[in-house]
Image (tube, rainbow, N blue to C red; front, side, top):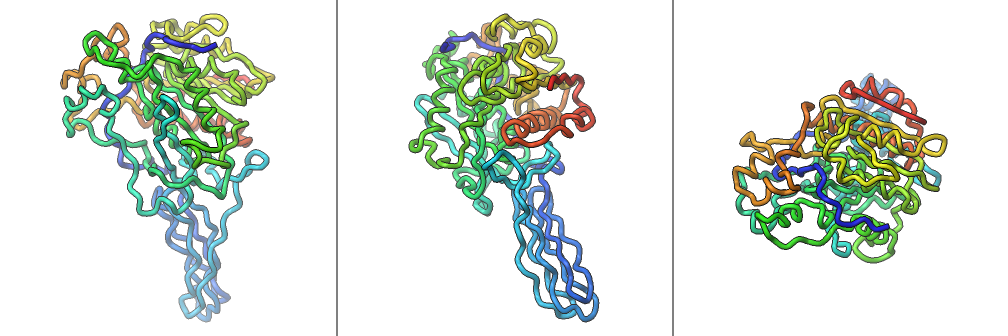
Amino acid sequence: MTVRSMRCSALFALLFMVACQSAESGSQAPGVGAGTGGSGGAGGVAGIGSSGAGGAVAGAGGTSAGGMSGGAAGMMIAPSGGSGGMAGAAGATGGSSGSAGMEAPPSTGCVGTSLLPLPDDPKLRGPWDVGVRTVTIGRLTVEVMYPAEPGSTAGMPEATYDVRDWLPESQRALVPDANSPAVGPIGGHLYRDVPIDPAHGPYPVVVMIHGTSSFRIASGSTNVHWASRGFVVVAADYPGLGLHDQLASTLECGLPVNGEQDIEGDVRAQITALEATSGPLEFLKDRLDMTRLGLAGHSQGACMAALLASLPNVQIVLPFTGSTAVSPSTTLKSIMWIAGMDDTVIGYNTPLIGNVVCPANPLPATSNFDAYTQSAGPPEVKKRLVGITGGGHLVPSDLCQKNAQGRNAIEEANMDMVCGINSAVIIGLPALFDCGMISLESGIEAVNYASTIALEETLHCMDRDAQFEGLRTALPQVGDYQRED
């Protein structure tokens, strides 16, 4: 059944995010160049590249007198942002130079899939830089994020966005340039229009559905994190649901909208385009495994992801703050619920106003916890629920940042008199802008960890039992953790 024209959910997308220029601490496993020395002595210790740069310094050759040969080749473990360690240098007393590095064994994934080695710590970025292309699929503008071909990003500028592009056109000039800096994902390493890695894969696909008054890059940091670990992620602007249309449709703005809501039809259109051998996604040809699909969403998008779990080949659903239960299907294997425990829009375990936009499936759910309880479970489906202490409604997103002037999105929009801010979604967006009390970085860390292990367990066929067992230890900001597996 096509789901149309659902009323506004309680999410206000960030208008003017501040670009986070620094990479996450330890966010990338550095490359290693281990050198073994010549007969005169052991090789020097490999150089360790800076976070995101890769090991650039080779292991030195033997330093003892009489070294006959240079250091042996270093193992190549190329992280996002850098090449692996170079071959060991010659011994200090005249040994010849070492041979070139050998590539590390690939990670073990699903049968027929080849992956670069993935860090066991799911908080760390994966071994790929991430490519991004903006494509048009029917009426949709879609951001496609994917593992980039190693070496293709060298010397390339990182991709950034101007969030004013999601305002109605007549309102964009109201926001000064200085108050709306270019934004990108936390951790960076996103590059436009580079080729997908053709030597690995095929890669499973995750379809992301944003919330009401939001837009396609709202969960960009988490989406890029997934792509760095071997997933292709597609995130569209959904007509009738997004920021532009929610503002434009107010009496105050009175502007044309991009279309009526048809989220199910829009998701199906993206899947059809992904399966095609030609068209806007032809650059992904032969690199996708369309038998392994995931659906993720935030707020109303989470409820729609839950409702669409029975679409063909969907193996995992990730509802980020939603109150619609997930029904079983012939392919569904896993559900990972992630929500802020202090959400004032869709309650963690109490009924709140945001529930009105989440459809019954088959019965109405009153909270995140209630929807989790009602959802399919063992033995067919593994399900988990992660509650983030101090997390508000927007914790599974990049939306809670302030600009250089110290104003959050709502404050900036009101300062600049953007139309519709105080009348959209009936009660106005300021009432729904709920960041909670946790820091942006701490919230994203928890979301990345929990979602990544669920995706890798299901769509990469990897053993992540140790990471599930250690979740509370690794994430002290998690206040509640439920699991049935």
